[in-house]
Length: 628
Image 1 (spheres, one colour):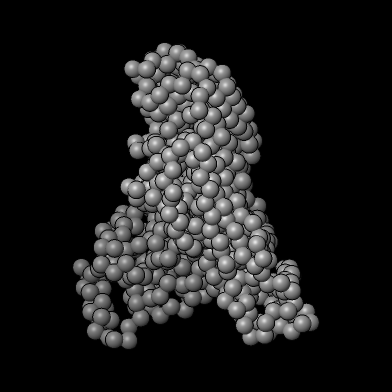
Image 2 (cartoon, rainbow, N blue to C red):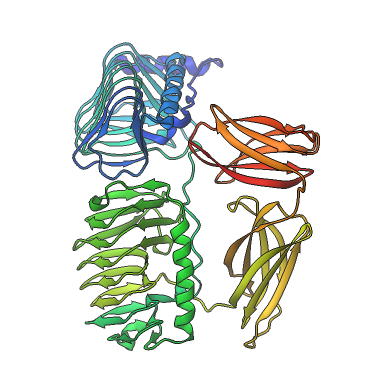
């Protein structure tokens, strides 16, 4: 009772003071992308642990981890930068002005409001601790603990009234030791000490040590959402075209069924025969022999495969034979660089974004265990999941699979009791089903308002001429032309009305871009009379602009060096973009007919970036550069 009265009195005193400091979140920098990191110490796992976020150490080993939904950094540029950023964050937390001074026993059902809490000795957490944001999602909670921090079994940090884990910080001057079944929220920084997480612990936050080992065993941890964290969308979806109407298809191979199989979507092959399917159990068309529809589907499927094949992976899952085992994935492009065995469950977490896309690329054959499951959560949709597999696919009995399987040059086998929420497609290979249920997403298949024939671009003097051809334009209202300097972020150029011709001849259309980029990307879409929009393809065109101006760039030390010739004085600039299209920096350049060299500060994170040179309002040069 005395403790509670004292806390109430202190709270009232600080609320009455207009100069009270209720804490400001530190700047995490690149440390924000790490779920577990030590600047100097080993990072070790035992047992089945699920992590979402990067992990690593700047000095020491990383051992015992299976597949991690993130990138491992061990003594590389990213780990060095993380160590530097972590020290900055620690110092900011360490000098924050305290507003409250609780006892060294936290929890037991107590509720704390936003502020900076300083405790002068070893501290423990017992039972439940409530952090109350009072309806303010920006409320920050900082705990400055001048000794070790331990939690008792089953202790929990609970967030109420809008509190967010991304705004909770624990700065601990000693070992952090979490007992079994602890539910911890917030970023935990141990200074010159170890961090231990134990069986059935759950963390929404991060565990970071300036110097000390991190030991993890049978835990589940994910980085917090919110507070400006990047909303994951995954890569753009491939354009399915006529493939959208098919549930079961082979571009070249027999398609055969045995037993009672139910399919929502078309079934067929473009080379060979289709047999064994009951028309009363297929909601769609069974193409017994190749026809115009299967020929179009085979061509569109090759385009889908080609797109998925060149999408750059964000994360490599390092242990293909251990795929599954309750691994949780978020919207990214993943790579499994060998034949893959899928056992148990995989969770696909869209983090509340119903349009988020997942692409899983497998460089080898793919096989599941019996009763394996792909489980969608937090808004994930099967129509946004794509599995690109280089080899045979076998989905064992009574499995539940979500997404479109795009198999290249391999057979697909769907076995007794399987449920497929999506499609089974192979560019070339036999496809067999045996007493399964397969269904494409409702509304995926709609008749195509047009059939595309071609879309290309050519350089005409200082303009770009875009031309395209279609046939059988049905219900088509207009075309839309868009342009991009980097192939990622597109801008609207013009709408071109459809000609509305429905005969079998090719309808040719064109548009001229009179102010093109020196290296530009163009994409075309059509919008039907009901307002539905679909994209065809993206092309790259090099235009004859910026004549006489040359640009070279390279990375050296802490800078990107850009060399230019003949850029107009005072009217040109060098812009640096992220691969997602965010402008990171811009500077004017003052070039003469002689060569000039400019320095752009190198980004802290490794990756691919875009260098643009703009002259008189036009982008006259665009190039990619790799920062390692």
